[in-house]
Image 1 (cartoon, rainbow, N blue to C red):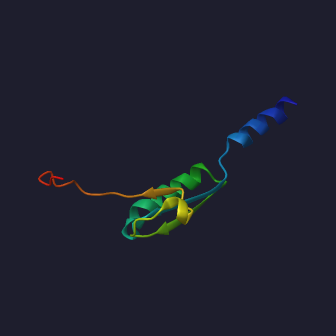
Image 2 (image 1 turned 90 degrees about the vertical axis):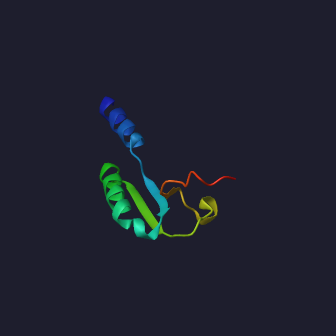
Length: 79
């Protein structure tokens, strides 16, 4: 019975499902290794990567995560 309980706990702790993410189209070289490592660590997870350069409404698009990067801001600009 203890073995069954331990296997059940381990299975419950394992991530499963689909992670839907987006990033800029030209970020493939940065995103692909991260996705590969994530899937290595969480083999029961599926990852859908939807490259897109538009700003998106994540909820409306059914996305879980958006990876974006920007350069340094121009400190001379004022609102």
